[in-house]
Image (cartoon, rainbow, N blue to C red; front, top):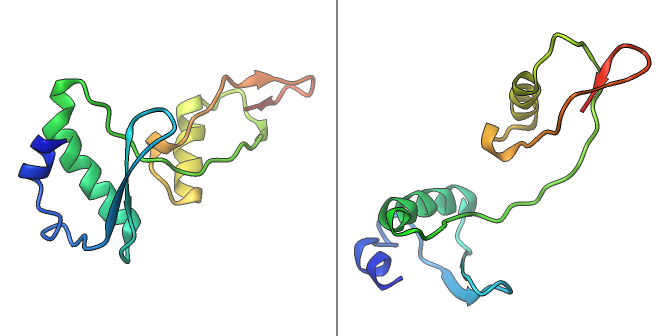
Length: 112
């Protein structure tokens, strides 16, 4: 953390209001309270990953998630196509979407 603190200037990233806490799992949680905090947190996380990723430190951002079931999927559709469409419609990145296997239904269509 000292290395990251010495190499990352929060003011240059536009972060003026942040707080460090210890998470329940023992990790370090850095909260950002500024405007556009999601964008700033993404930028900060990428800087942290560039500096600390090679040392084995895992950098991640907590995010809210929900489950949904999509039914009536054509058998020719791949899970990657489902992920792409969910990301496009949901306004999120592909790596924020996870799917299971497309399962067949008695109707001949699939669901995921």
